[in-house]
Length: 341
Image 1 (tube, one colour):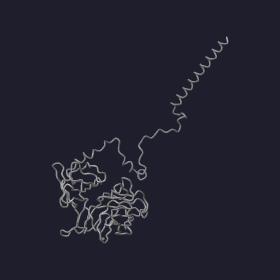
Image 2: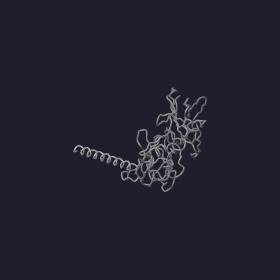
Image 3: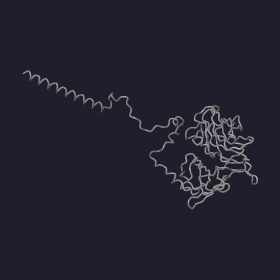
Image 4: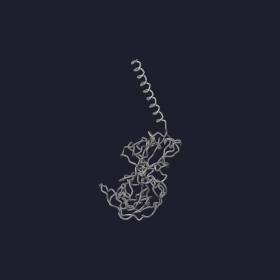
């Protein structure tokens, strides 16, 4: 009799244990599928969208950030190598800034190019593909073109059966030095002797810059920011109202500078000093004072001065960014000078 009671009691506990386990399992299932479950209150699904660069978010204004984002529904642009086929002539996309060659060694010929549409400086070595001077990579827009040789004041390029000659100073300038839409080196002449040479910068370096857009290289070449305000086609320091900031510009030819023309597209009036790098490696002041363009929306600041007793191809412009509130941006800088002695 006792054994029978024990068996019944054991069976009762087993059944109740299984029942409790079943109830617990069902409760967990309901909790995991219920939208109103307190267990999931406050949980947010993970954001799998790629983060935007923090600095870019800070500097973006209005719809500019959205404008620059790629459209995922739009087919990607054709490759540069395909787009280059639209150009039948080298001169449509490249401008010659300078040439160099070891005397008596034709294979050492070098030509220095500038691509205004891409803001790229390029090096062309004899018989080789044309490469970006900053990265050393081949420029696909110039695929097929190779330097074939130099002539006085110019360079000859070949692409299969095609041949084209680019010349330094081929830009159509007026006697007064007016800009007519191309880059390069130009000269105002009296008879055959160059009197004044005008150049756009071919490379640039700055104390600070706003990453890729608004980088120092945006000042290279002729003006391409024709509207006032903040634009990615002009140089801007990393921060606004940050005291003195400078940009150094290098040109193709060494000259004795007699003037500088600065295109200021955003909050003009912050230029306080112009300097030139002398042959001894010292920075010599060419001008310092007050920029009269303050208060204008977009302006040319033209600074004439006496030619120093040395020639140079590098100048430095210093801005007082705290003197004119907001972003101060430069679009292009023209160097005017007499031929080096």
